[in-house]
Amino acid sequence: MATNGEQKQESRHQEVGHKSLLQSDALYQYILETSVYPREPEAMKELRELTAKHPWNIMTTSADEGQFLNMLLKLINAKNTMEIGVYTGYSLLATALAIPEDGKILAMDINRENYELGLPVIEKAGVAHKIEFKEGPALPVLDQMVEDKKNHGAYDFIFVDADKDNYLNYHKRLIDLVKVGGLIGYDNTLWNGSVVAPPDAPLRKYVRYYRDFVLELNKALAADPRIEICMLPVGDGITLCRRVS
Figure 1 (cartoon, helix red, strand yellow):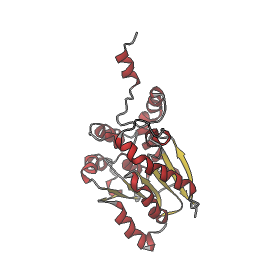
Figure 2: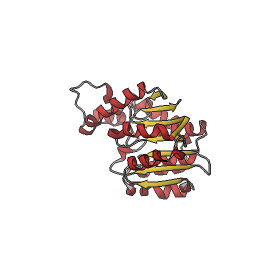
Figure 3: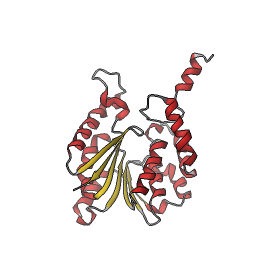
Figure 4: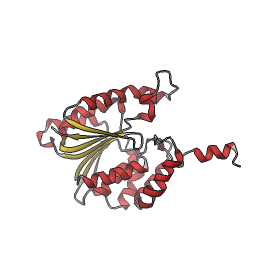
């Protein structure tokens, strides 16, 4: 018979930094071990394991979401993409492996040091030439891009996994930059499940702080006539927005 300690160990999820909202850890582990890990490219596995040792590993994209993004990009034949919020580059690598040899990713993050942790793995995978990395806040870069009409409708896919308090500010700019029929993916739109937590729920400070921004974003996306949306319970929740006008 298992002791309490062993039971706790069994129920604790094995994926470092996992954010799955599935109530059963065992079921999520089944998804990883049956579908994700057997087909995960060696470079992505290496980067995932490297990132697991980082003190901020909770920031990483989950392995199942990485697999989802990789397939999604292939399905829509994405070639010109953008990523806001890179961390060590797991989702960036999933994108780089999915797009064609002459595909491009404009990647932005305020922390080059984290990006450079994963860069040797990305280089070894032979896809670093697809990435243009810019260090610093994304909004000034986006403002500059929006000013130039040639950038309007230039992107097939944009993935946002950055400061939640700026998601709506990003959306106001990205809607011009993504093509009609293209996709914007906003990560963490279920925000640790806190979007349905009662007001007095005991939430971690950063979860409570950003929750209202996530709720505001979700409401705004649902009301935006320029997009079709689909909110998926993958990872910590991802909302796909397809630009229709």
